[in-house]
Each structure stands twice: as C-alpha cells, then as structure tokens.
Length: 107
Image 1 (tube, helix red, strand yellow):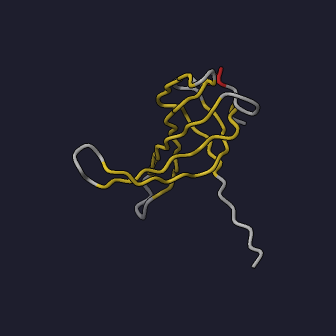
Image 2 (cartoon, one colour):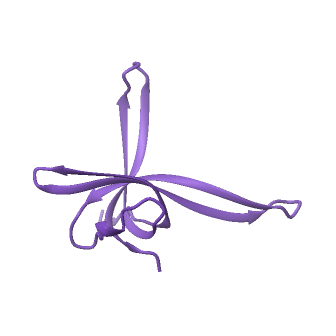
Image 3 (cartoon, rainbow, N blue to C red):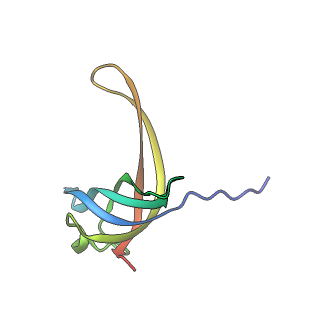
C-alpha cells in the first residue's frame, strides 16, 4: 500500500505573545497567533470569531525571527503535533501546536 499523507498548516494572523529561548546554541521561539473568521448570522449580524493557535519553531532558513513581536501580522506554514500528558493536578490533558517551517510577513 503506497499512500501519501499530508500534515500541513498555513496560517496568517496577528502575534499575541512571543517567548524566545536558546537551547544548545539554537534560537527557538513559541508564540500565540490570532486568526479571525468573519461571517453573518441568520439575522444578518456580523460575527467575528477569533481562533488562537500555539506555534513553535527554530530560527533558520525560512523563519524570519525579526518579525516575532506582539501585534505583527505574519504568514506561516508548518505541521500539527498533538500531545497527551498528565498535569501536575493528575488530570489527563492534550494539546495541539503548529511546528513552524516557514514564517514571514503577511502577503
């Protein structure tokens, strides 16, 4: 069976928060990204729905870290990664984040 699977995410939005760090000489980052969806409800009222996404990656080719400031509008591509873990309170939790492959100014 030769099946090809795709795990690709493309987002354009506004950076909410940024955390930069260094691990073993490599610069990494975590950020939250707000994306909006606008639509009208049955009564014609405009609804703006905001989705927050957690994103992380490493500085390098395809990632312009000079754009990593709160309020900047960026365009990124990456892939999804989901994790399950046990929190300090003993509850099972899960999270999904975008692992960033490229990041640049919004088009």
